[in-house]
Amino acid sequence: MMEDEVSELQGGGADAITSEFNTYEDYLDRQITPTDLYYLEDIELARQLVELGYRGNGEILRREEFESRKEAAELARRQKMHNKPKKLASAGKDLTGYPVLQALAQREEAVRNGKLTTIIFIRDRNSKGQEVSGYIDYAYRLKTENLEPIFDRKKKLMPKALDLSFYNWETQTSTSNPTPNFQVIADNEAGLLFKNKRDRKIINVDPRARPGDNSTRTEIQTEEYMQVVLYDHVTRRRS
Image (cartoon, rainbow, N blue to C red; front, top):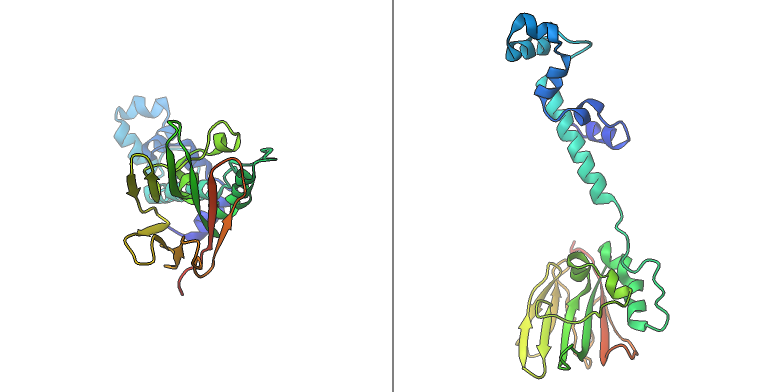
């Protein structure tokens, strides 16, 4: 497929023919008249005559050209959808008095576009009154869950057993899971570590240690939770 063909379709010159007809046969059928069918008595023969240029109006597309244009139109549609900016879950929300939500809202766009990754540490009590804590991959949550109810304060952002790391202090249940952005490194002398899969930098969540290259640690003073710490990592691809 030619790149200029895709560019032409993306530029607004959407191919009317391939948009109107799902298949090449549908396209040929539009050129066939009831009189053609009356005399030929064979739809396949009628299609062949149209394709060869003996029937129909104007220049007839060859099958290969039709399918090429169809493929280009579909690729242009997918690229347009992929490039369409997603609405921020925090957009238009009044977060006054909610410093955790404010901090997450400030980071949302950068996290969504991949310029920033953020690990959210939360310690709080769950709906059963049990103390739980965990490390949440913010980008992965944004991708897999609608966080608008969180910013609307209809739900509370809490660590789950499927997050990067989770611990229930009452039941002593402990889990850890990799995400598309981070690998979990446990049972290490340095304690719990996370490796960014994009640039392979290590994020150290030990409050007594430096968080690592291109990383910062921010503890949020809030009454929303028992404790919240954000680990921001500016992602850079390895050269």
